[in-house]
Image 1 (cartoon, rainbow, N blue to C red):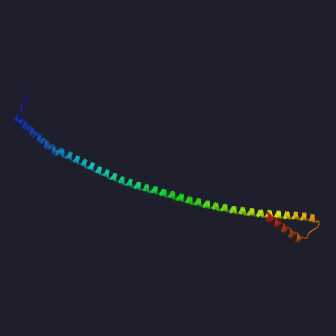
Image 2: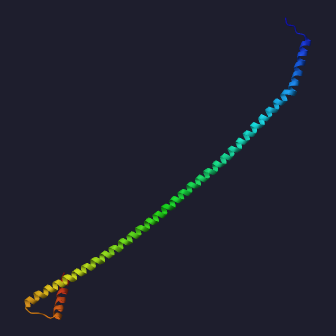
Length: 162
């Protein structure tokens, strides 16, 4: 059977205490040092990660600002291009309108000139026919001055009635 002696219990406690102090002196110091180094390394890694994260956030903010500025600049460039295109369009339209007015004016002058030429030609033809008819009726020849005066009077009278 098992017997408990006080001396055995005291020697066991004393052995445990000696073992504890030896382990504390030799083993626990080194283990604690390693654990402290690990803790310091983890803290430095966390600090480094936080610093890197902060830098990333700052870079992201700068990127977003630059992107916003680029979008505004692109919108400004597009608006300027549209304004220039509108001015060019309006200039071309004004130029085309001016050309159309000029061409219309030239066409109207040509028509008026052709009308005048046709009227003169018609008057000359009517005058020639009237002189021939008058000559036939009168069976005589008239002189040039009389012919001209008679024809002009006839044409102005006919022109007023028409």
